[in-house]
Image (cartoon, rainbow, N blue to C red; front, side):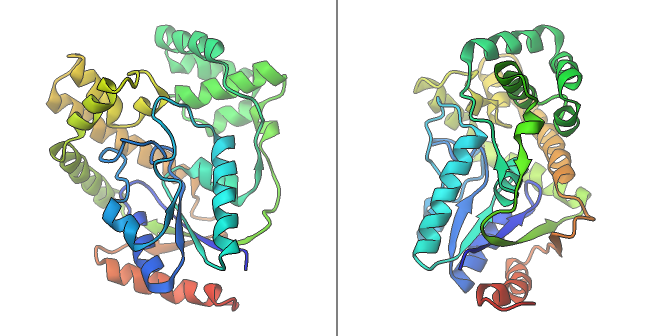
Length: 311
């Protein structure tokens, strides 16, 4: 049966832990929906499932790309659909889990993504403008040609702004017109883990501290030594760009840690904008520190769907 359950929520809400518990209890396979966990060698800073965890349940779309490579939404959709078809062909059940809302909605809403390959020269030119004038100047350019996309994109997110401008310049059509939505050829249930903002900030602050203690600086240094450019798209990830600045003597370690915390807080606020409380497609679930309690809550909701029954 072509069905899946998506577990979403802001960074640090406990999505991966909940999915692992559910997949162990109810069966199924986990499909990644995180734009940074696809990169090999980026384990600590992305909070990627550990090898031991991945041995417990089959995982898909982790460690599929070299961090020197770019990875587009179109590529993700192709990879995710292939993974889903493989799981369904085995008669198994997918759990879609990750912290990149664009990936999740693009899959669940069957977005029609523009087939425009990256233009390195154009991107470099736009990035130089962002560095000289600030990302807000690019955001203003985008608002002039595609106000719909501009309203969706954080003015500080130069990467997404540049992509939207690239699509417009290459096709003459706004990216928002390309991103049409059609019903997917599968059924889904969408659950969001609800954590109070103050508690969530405390969690991610603690996690950032643990990441640095676990060797995030060494991880970034290893990537750079392996030839990953410091300005590679993968290295723009939260934590990685702050460590690069530290390794380049642009900041202290303490400042890098604090900047990583603040950037994670901003990411959380951005993620929350994608999942609205009044969206009838989303079932909000109160998160608890007790992972078993989470599993019980999700099991009670999801079991009927997995069995093909209606709630």
